[in-house]
Length: 159
Length: 159
DNA sequence: ATAATACTTGACAAAAACAGTAGGGTTTTA
DNA sequence: TAAAACCCTACTGTTTTTGTCAAGTATTAT
Image (tube, rainbow over all chains, first blue to last red):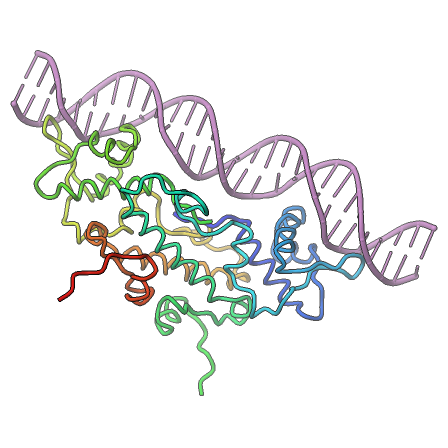
């Protein structure tokens, strides 16, 4: 259940590649395509959305490519996925402006809403920079320690 | 993003109806259908899965219907959704026995895994009983207080 | 200038997943 | 023994997903 679309997945991976070139080197679609094994044409669609959303900017012509529009620690995973897949809305009655018809079943309504908020909060705490450092943990979620165990993280530098 | 299928949603709502009759009164498909506005035929599919999974049992013949197989505080939302939608697997490479091919992209791999675990943990802490009482909160997630604010819960009984 | 590089855009199509219907059972009890 | 109620499989229409294709436009090195 709850599968993420390939657009969302590829989008994050593409942003990761672009972030690696930041701020010196523009990264071309072709490079992303080769490194992440996604077709150029498909990436074009994805990067177009991310560009319109202001997350990246493009430089045309020879030597061009894509560059982050702001630093990697200012770009959350949530902001990437929101552009590519829309907001987290586990049920149609949680769609933006979607007036829930059956208020009597509000019990489950609140449940899905709470879960959605939990997911969103999690994704907001994780930035591209965290992703690159392999150093991400849930702020609103599990305890740091538990998280680190659960995802088998390399330990952070000790004082 | 991350939409829940109607099967999952209806399943939880159906379980909620069945729980309301527990332990005295078997609840018929027809009753669930009317109260939750879902077709009988569709509910049959859903309840069939839940029965095979051992979450409910059925009583045939006149006066029959469905009954919880164990008490409402022993049935988590996670267990219901797992039967109807399969395990939380945000990406195909997190499918059970799905060997992830591209280990180099393991950075995102761990991210999706962590998110999935977060969701699963959340859903495991909430039981049908919690749902019926309108009294659910995230164990692994937000602080109780914050949660209550965020989902605009009716306050619990005061001592 | 102009060729090469690289991004831009919109239309379209195959495939998978989803949502639900149809129609024929079987079992139990009043 | 008939009615109530569950049981099971197949099928189908729709939507979403996952891309491809083709024809651009903009920029820069030479």
